[in-house]
Amino acid sequence: MHRVEKWWHIDDESGKVVCTLCPRECHIPEGQRGFCFVRTNEGNQLVLTTYGRSSGFCIDPIEKKPLNHFLPGTPVMSLGTAGCNLGCKFCQNWDISKSREMDTLAGEATPEKIIEACKQTGSRSVAFTYNDPIIWAEYAIDIAKIARQENIKTVAVTAGYINPDARREFFQWMDAANVDLKAFTEKFYRKLTQTHLQPVLDTLVYLKHETEVWFEMTTLVIPGENDSPGEMKAMCDWIVDKLGDDVPIHFSAFHPDFKMMDTPRTPHETLIRCRQIALDAGIKFAYVGNVHDRANDTTYCPSCGKAVIERDWYEILDYQLVGNWCGHCGATVPGVFDQGATKAGDWGRKRVPVRMS
Image (cartoon, rainbow, N blue to C red; front, side):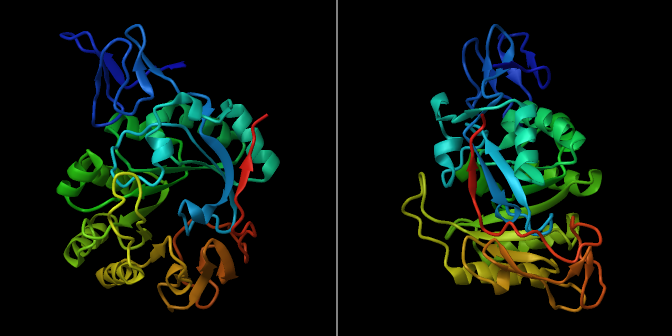
């Protein structure tokens, strides 16, 4: 248990705790939990029940987050907790994000212990992932503060559903993020996530124009729900207009899960079409995900068009960057790359579970 210091108050009329971390602003009676299930009213105070507890620790390739322009080829220590402030019917980590059993949490670790594990395993960064770190922001921030002292980068994998005050402090401590832009209609967000679109758009605009956080976006393409060419074009046009043309986007394949078992898998051709719509809209870096497609998961120089990072799943086959510059023509490739380096990391596809002890 961890007493929450910020982002809540007592409602004068009802006496309930009002959590202001995310746009839900749950009114929580004594002894009850908010929608996310991990923030609870204990003695008229807001408490985070999962502070220091995780659903597991694992070292992943950074490309799995997915981040294609952030320290390519390097290992990242990944951890999550339980619960979520979204209600996605298509959740592909539902056993974690929708968990109502605290005993699903496999490990306990202080922020200091997690960063020490990063150092011992050679992890260049730590990722807050599996479930949305926004609901355990206090834990993530405390880890990030120590990580920054040790020159270990921090990554948030998030849906971006957060209120402005919390947004400012949370992303102040993040070096990179992958934000799920799940669709581009309010109808989709209401029907399939039980949230709203505009706060997510606000988070993306905030990241681009008011922070130094390197971020990429992911859209899980669901047949019949968010895959129409018109919606994809509108989304990509908005991205270019509001965020610019150099924010990478990943179009990932859906597979039947949770409450959408009857929805078919995303055809590979649909992902390729979405990527082409993005390129035609002017987005320089568009990728496909959850499928094997070397050509459409490779990074190409926006100037000369030659491959600068060739990938096979999460493994880098060829690397033609010198710092942020194309090794073919010298043009700048946006991202966070080791300055002066002429090769990527060699972590490859490995996924290594870590036991905190």
